[in-house]
Image (cartoon, rainbow, N blue to C red):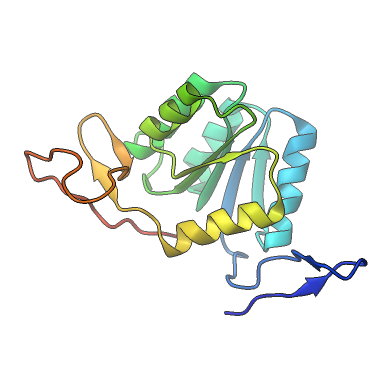
Length: 185
């Protein structure tokens, strides 16, 4: 792969889209209740090369799209319906509403307080992005999830990325270990 080194009118480098991966076939489901923010996020995803972007302003329509379309990437705004978003992520991770519990899920928030971050991580999101965002930031996060996606832990109470750091930091008396998950991106 190669990097694109475009320059702005001032002569400095600018980000001008993803040149590492081909996302044309990937399906993105995006939830944000604010129309202007949805349009901004949609435009950012188009610049990165995504072409199949389904964006919704209601969680019910988002949920239906996830059930019907089996997306490769889900982007969720946490700021309006935190509890419902976390419940949706848990449903996805436990295969209650989709056949792919390993879909990449990125949550976004303007207010990354400790409760919001912890609840989202405990629900099983892959990553949290603090707003405001840039195309470059989204690209870096997606790139990191493609190259270094965490293995998953599956227990009766949690399905999601392994948050343990280092060997032996969390007891694992049943020897459940982790599983490598498919990454459709």
